[in-house]
Length: 261
Ligand code: ZN
Picture 1 (cartoon, rainbow, N blue to C red):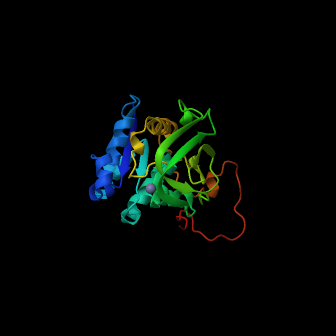
Picture 2: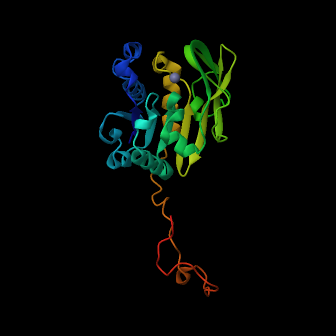
Picture 3: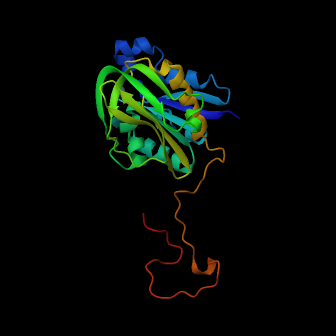
């Protein structure tokens, strides 16, 4: 079965900015989903901020293997309940790709637990992405480096937790560098952050960027399925201990009582 992938797009600038609409007339999410669907092992659909529950109902997330997230203009409009729902699915094993300005999305900050801030400059600079982990599956088919002629600059420091792996580092014409391809694991979920993707440039039409996204979805996919119960905190009563034990000392909880949250 193909990897069931949902491409989430904020879908604001495509409808309010003529430049962005010109590059992505059907929305960035559609361009990304179409690129992913060129690989027969991926089945990508889209969801947007404007849909009920932002297109991310419990039922839909339960049938999602990998979610990709692009937002910029209005991260605050994303419902906290949906963010918690997505976080739980990541802990259970759903893959998550966070793209470009998604670094400030609620879901990314929730899963990282740090500010996720960075330096930036919108000057159409050349970006050179260096593959510094050439045997990583996300870098498959990508050379030692590739260039994007026009991109927004993101500069260090990027205030995220130390990643599991660093796959790409970007250089920008103005001199800054940035860790542009990073992985983490949260619970059973694989998370990949990929930097390029400013909406006033045709980044998601770039063949190398599309290849990284396809590789990223395949890497983030967890074929073992959901690790349900990962948020449960069950009490193990004395009589269920693996070895016989005798209860000693005072205790706070009554038998069978749920733990505090
Ligand atoms: Zn941007």
